[in-house]
Image 1: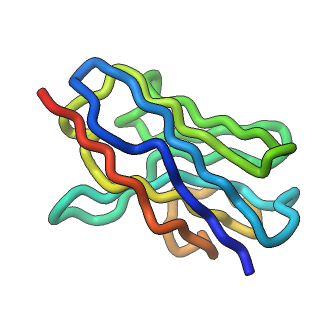
Image 2: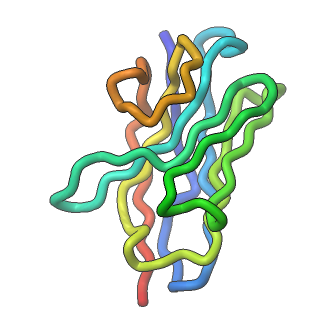
Length: 124
């Protein structure tokens, strides 16, 4: 059973930084790509970033490109989302997800496993 557990959310001021972590367990992830998504109140869950487990290759939503950085530590089965220059519109619950076919897609339906989410709140 694959488990994904997010951590690192919290409150930040606009212009500040936060780093989210996602610890993966339950199997080998060498063929998986991993993604971050977010969901603000009253909005659809949206893609933020994805990373291949080997390579690495990365892929970002336009809204976070240049501000957020996705990375991973294979030895720890953990991947990260470094969020800089935060804006109030970044406020959301952030979810990590695993795609067992490694497609590096922004499509939610392609992700097989999901964490429970961590709240990020950015004050103006």
